[in-house]
Length: 535
Image (cartoon, helix red, strand yellow):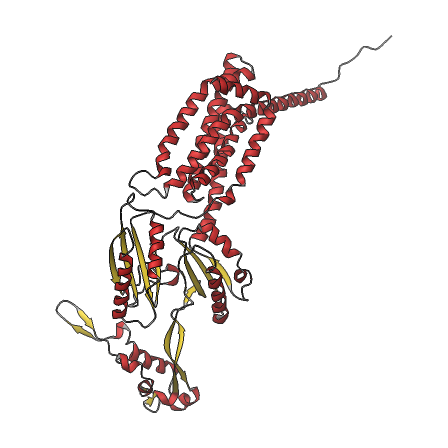
């Protein structure tokens, strides 16, 4: 305490040096922000993950089961994997909601992987990276590792009406994405094609024979995939109805000559399909996705521990992004879009919080200037929060922003204790400003430090990672609060008295100027005094 009071007296005698040092600390802390990794939500460290397999279009269920079994064997050899549960033929789990992937396909499989308990294994992201290395030996399959939640992937979308330009732009962006080191698998909805039979109608012959294009499409649809479910005949059983689908066999659907013999209804009678159309084997996109009724291509990139903010910044500098073809536009979807909205929302929340605190302090102190002397504690706490995130290696994400909002209230509490006691000492005990501030620091320093130590000790286990529960979400918040509390407590105990004295001088100067103006106004409004005439 004697050492602290000695330093406080020095800061009060050199208050401008103290203020400029505090401003320099805040400006210097802003330069730390680019060094902190940023993201939306930190990736979790739960003991469960998934591997999502996607095979080539046209793959049968038996082939999917064989590939899933091979993948299960490869994953089982990874250390810290306890069990693997395989689901073959399901396409809804792990699919991209922006691609409309909720439909079930036999060429897709999902492997649910159970890991060892936390504490007996490294972080989940390291094990998932080992899984990707092991699955690289699986031929002919695209795979994604992870639950696909926030903090695990980066999503990018391109939209445009020209499919050729859209495909070319997607290929260039995918090539640039693969140059970013550390990323996991990169998948694009434009990079997957399937074999198909292309039918080219001869509209002149079809018009002569009275065959419409709708009749050609209807005949081929029923022959290859069957009729609509509502039009199917039903086999009535005692407990249920079984729909009956009539279509060509698999071998027949691959025979172009046989498809040409199908009969199409015409005005003059049935006509063979080969008379009004030609057939050829071709290829096309496996799926055509649309966003807001505009054709689009979606990218899904596994972050694999790389911060989302770094990937977003790198993508913005791509030549393929900066020189998109005419009619092709980039869309921010997924975590990148929500992260931008979150930063703007929390900025407004912090400004609103500071304004509300100022209004409450005006009502408490019955003064408009003295509450301003408390606000430096908020600014100093932000610098400490950035240092805490940088030292602990945590991301600047939604939990850390929540910690910054918490700091606004906690840090101002310390300064309120000092300022309120100093005002009370001057008002009730007649002390001068210097003695009142020294007395406030002497009597309020211990309670402030005790509450800070208690809060830091309560949040320290979250940063260290003690306990069996997953604290990946709460750790950045705790790191921000701990760093902000330590710097805010130390610096506010030294800076707040100096800033209070400056604000008090300003208030005294404003009061003198106001009284001087009032006196001048009264003199102007006073009636002239009559003087006696000289004889």
